Image (cartoon, rainbow, N blue to C red; front, side, top):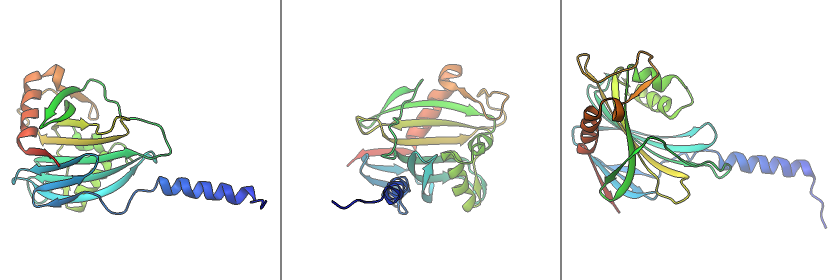
Length: 223
């Protein structure tokens, strides 16, 4: 029997762990015209209104625990804060951890046969909140915007919609619709820049209108 030294085995195990936790370099999903096509987890086509333009995609590692494939469609000027956006994120945990995706205070919404849950929040400074943690998925999206001379709107409201395509809840499709909020809007905000108001409770009518806007610009089809 050949005896393999323990140190090389430890190095090999470490290298395998690093490999498992290293994000892919190329996206699995792709865009044709206004349609984002996903062949798996879930198999779906997401078509966005012609008013939006596609900015691009990137793959990021989140805290060494998960990998996120991000896609971004925006509406608004060629530079500066966007007026509206769709941030689409296909995310899964690495095999080296046992975490699952769980969301509290989310409400159900069916999108063409896909059972999503959602919440609606407003933020006094949405850009500040997303950039507060430089390792977050929001900060990664902010950097993608910056590459195109764009930015998150400051005062904004967003609809976060989440679909868990696998029974183990270790994979998710997250769609965030966000739009700038006018200064004279009746949408409530907290005084702290990084704290959101749950509009489902605080302003149900505004939450309903924002959800309707999010769904109006998006068509989701099963493949």
